[in-house]
Length: 115
Image (tube, rainbow, N blue to C red; front, side, top):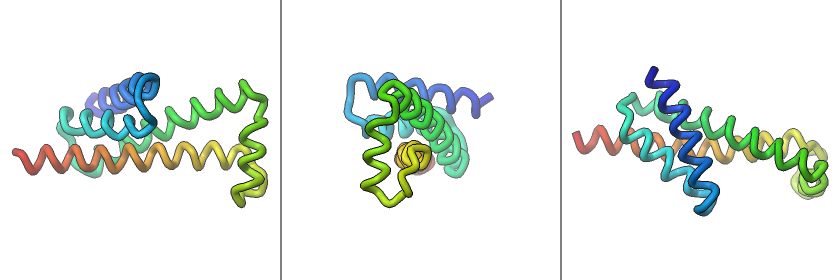
């Protein structure tokens, strides 16, 4: 139950924050959720990582489909990924997942420290 709640809440807050705030607002959302929902630091990291990885992968894929992969093909040529647009989407999702995961880890450890 806590897993699904934390996963959904992290994704929802990150998505809403991303509409109005800079990209790094995902860290704030993940930190708040991990602070409010009591879980171990490892679980908080994994849940936030998976939540943002999925969110950013889906959003990157949708954006990529809307512009017919024009931008991702050009970026895939600049970055040494062999011109693969799929790898660009996965790298994008990995960055979002890591930022959210470490922010959630911080929120969870902060909760433990203040206990």
